[in-house]
Image 1: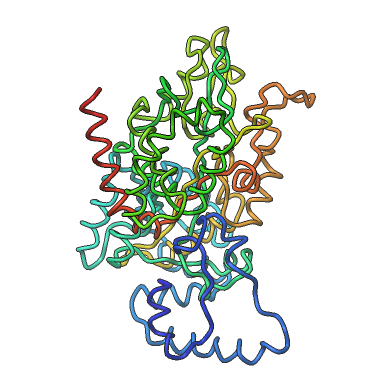
Image 2: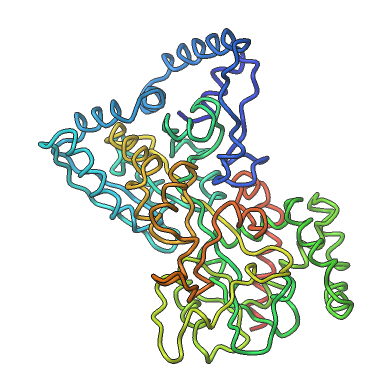
Length: 480
C-alpha cells in the first residue's frame, strides 16, 4: 500500500510516528532500511497498543479499493499464500514488465519455475522491456492513462523523477512484502518509503600505471583533471549524486576531506569556495554548503563526458590510459578480459587505498513498484516478493559484485553463495585481482563514504541546485 495513502487514512486514529526508510528526506539511503527501519514491538507493555493499531490498520485497509486494496491485503500474506494467488490469477496469461535493468528478463523465468514447483501445470508467458534514454517515465505515464494497463510492474531508478513524476502523481504504487519488512525489523504499515531491490555503487577508480596519485576526493577535480564520467544528461542518477553532495552529511564529508589537503591544493580551491558562499546561503544549504557547490562546479566543468560506463571501464583498465580516472559502476570490473595490455590490476579503486580521504563514490537504488492499473497485481506482488526475499529471485543481480540487496537476510545469503568479498582471489586463495574484492554495503556506506541517493532530498534540491547545475552544464558545453 502506498505509505502516503496509509498515513492520510490513519492520521486521526494513530499517534505513533511512522518509521522512516528509503525515500524519506531523513533517510540516508533506500538500501539502508536494515538499519533505519527500526525494530518490531515485542514487549508485554506494548501488546495492547499494537493490537489497537493493527485493528485500526485493518479497518483502514477495508476502506481501500482497487489496486490499493490488493496491495494492503498482499502485505499481510505469507509468500506461500501470495504465490497461490499469483498462480490463480496469471496461469495461461502474459506478464509484461518494464525496467531500467534488463535482468528482469532473467529473473522472470526463475519466478515461473518456482511457481511450477507449487503447481506443475502452471504456465505464464512474459515480455520484459528496457526503454533507453529515460523513456521509461514517458512509457509508464502513457500506460497509466488506460483503464487497464499493459505493464504489471516496474523496476526503476532515479529517485528524483520517481518521486515527482511517478509517486506524487499516483502512477506507481509501493508494495512492501511481509517477509522483507520483517527482515528489516519493521512492518509494511510502519515502513515509509519506496521498496528498493538493491543499492548499486559507482566508485572512483584510476589507472595506476602512471605517476598521478588520487588520495583525496578533491584530487579528482584538481587542475588539469578530466575524469571519465557518464554524462548527467545521459543518466540522470548522476545528477542526483551531485544534488546529494549538498546535503549536510555529505557536504561535511567534503569539508573534512578539504581540511586534509596541503596548502597548494587549498589555494587552488579557495577562490571557488569563496565565490560560491553566497549561492550556498541563497540555496539554504548548511555551513559547509559552499564546499559542496565548489566540488560540483569543478566536476561539471571538467569531467570527460561518456555515454556509458562500459567504455569508461575499457579505457581505464588499459595500460595506455596512464593517470586517467573515472567514476563508474563497480560491477563493470567483472567483465574485463585480461590480456598483455588490459588488466583489472591496471586500476585502483580509490577508496580501497590506505589513507584515502573523502567520498568514495555514490550509491543509487533500483526500486520496485506496481502500476496503478496493473493487469496482474497479485502476480506482480508475488514476483516482487520473490526478487526481494529469496536468494534465487535476487540472483540475476546478486551474482555480480557492487549490487547489494536491501533485504539483510538475502544480502547475507548472497555473499555466502557468491563470495564477492574474495572475488579477486583464485582457487588457491591468492589475491590476484584485489580491486575485485568487494568490501560490501556496510563498508561502503561507512568507511567508504558512499554518497547515498535520497529521492525526497533530490526532488527538493532539483529546483534550486538543479537549475544552477543546468547553467554550469550549458557553460561547460559551450566552452569545450
